[in-house]
Length: 113
Length: 111
Image (tube, rainbow over all chains, first blue to last red; front, side, top):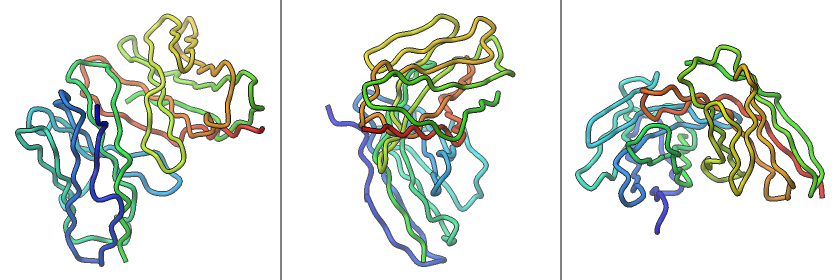
């Protein structure tokens, strides 16, 4: 079975631009979460979606938004990019039951110049 | 969210056991203890989790103190591939699947 897949793997954008990152969860997983990891830090929670509804949101500005599609894939959108948005963006999928493991993708490395 | 405290780094020799500690003195009765690890240039990977009893799986063992205020991840025979950042995370029953990562502990393995 394919794991969590994210695209693109690397991306370079200019300040002020918009970016869309994509995630395909493991087959059968209905929950998708997004995390931002800046260099030297642990991942920080951005969003969780389950059955196309937002179930949780971290402390990120409104420039960050996401959505989940009927096939449970997800997009993370970031508007008006800042240099500080440069990071590794990770997607994780899991089963809806509590306390089950989360499976992470390899991430998208975003560089804002 | 209850907080966890881990040392910044540890070193181990290959093929020797490694004990990675985690303190969580404010843990509540409904918090599960999860461990994830992140190898260089990869996303985090689930290792093990437990509530009260010690747990074993193919990757590691988790020893939980009787008062649950600390736990230890045990790698029985470290390999070079085990060099990674290890995160100890508490997840409350009834909460969503949000993972709150700290800085983790960086494990180096010497050949």
